[in-house]
Length: 258
Image (cartoon, rainbow, N blue to C red; front, top):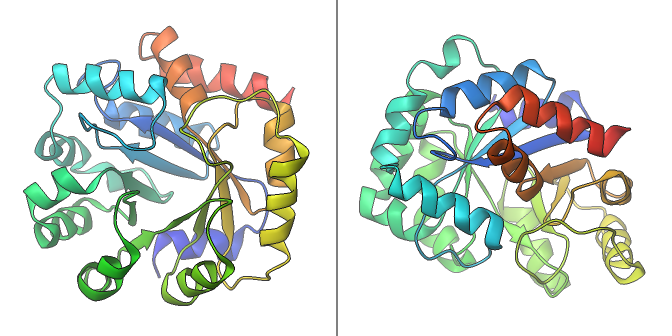
């Protein structure tokens, strides 16, 4: 069974997924960050593929991607860094990136490389759902890879239910119609959106991301989903700690759980 599905079968609540951008702040720390996060109890990891023209990323992740690209990070280099990662890492690993570099690599080649190094799924924010259904889903399924789709407060109920019927793993709930970045709290409008989606009783579990950076936002999101995805806050801390993942994740836990 795919590790993403295993995780959500085994753990129903308080799942913590961490995003970081491969190649930032140093070009070769990808595997070290992954191993450290697992050792510190993180349930799932999203590894960002740096791209020069992101659509949904805020300034923190944009800057991380720029630094990674300047440092020489490429998709081929990332896959080379992930070789052997499954010798001692068991939690689900997801690649998150935009369609352009994946298309340049070749989607089936991309899926083959994912399978070869033990990647479990992918998040491609700019992949149209129609293209997913017609072209990308059949290829990904051949390699037992999950393509995770995003929804926002503006996504119609009809589209949400369509996504729920035709995807596996989990649904990525974007907390608001905005770019990534830390937020101090989630207002009543956002929490009403969380409750509305929760009340739909979807088949897939949901993870909430964008803006989770402290105890208030973490608890508000966790109350209405299987767990939370934290990106910008961890990327900021990892930069501040000059790539020391242990110090960064320790500070993150202090911000969220204490």
